[in-house]
Every structure is written in structure tokens, then in C-alpha cells.
Image 1 (cartoon, rainbow, N blue to C red):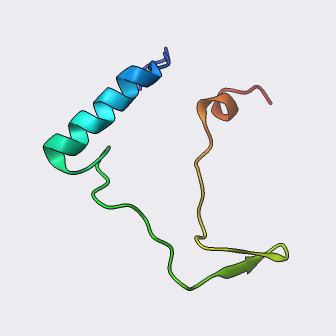
Image 2: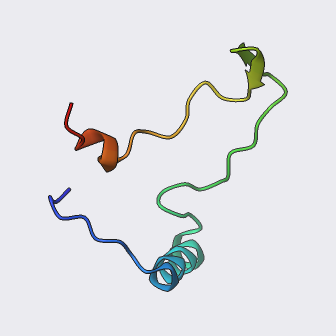
Length: 65
């Protein structure tokens, strides 16, 4: 990863995704979408389907403490 992060225009991102899907049958290495099962986990008085979530982004990694 470089130090300079530049956003990708939406049109370019969608072209990248559709081209890759047609060529490889996958998007960014993911071959099939995730489908939640019947198992749910309780946490903080609610239920969740998966015990993981999105990773912290560069805005939190670069923040000064």
C-alpha cells in the first residue's frame, strides 16, 4: 500500500467489478456471496449473524492519539 490514497471514481470502480466478474467469475477474489445461516449470536441485547465486521479504515489508523 502506498502512502498516497486516491479515490476511484464510481464509474471506474463499477467497470472494474463487472469486467472482473465476467472474466473470472469473482469480484476481488470473492467467488460467491456470503449467505447467513440460521445460527445467530447474542451480543449487547441483540443478535448478530457473523462474529466479525469491517476492519478499521485508514482514517482510524492514521489518527493521532
